[in-house]
Image (cartoon, rainbow, N blue to C red; front, side, top):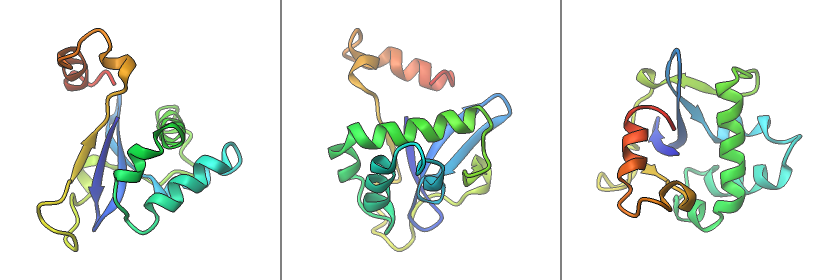
Length: 132
């Protein structure tokens, strides 16, 4: 899973579909989660609404993961009516209001993805091939 900072500090989730690479605006798309999972929606909103640090994303991964996976599934199935989604090439990366040395993207691999390959080589190869 790849998170990026875009358009002055928003958090985006990068997805690859057959028709190209896209960025889901996570906070802008939270209404897509409300009926199914209000707890996850609340956690994501609380962490990211003010363009906050990604440290709590990792700390609360069990909740955050469910929400991000749900957004990705909806985008992959093209159930986009409540998603804010942009073509990858149409977003401005980074955050001009934060320290230029701040993190611009975060790749997250779960234990089950690297359990058989402690180096992460297989995960990186799949990611590079767009099979994530």
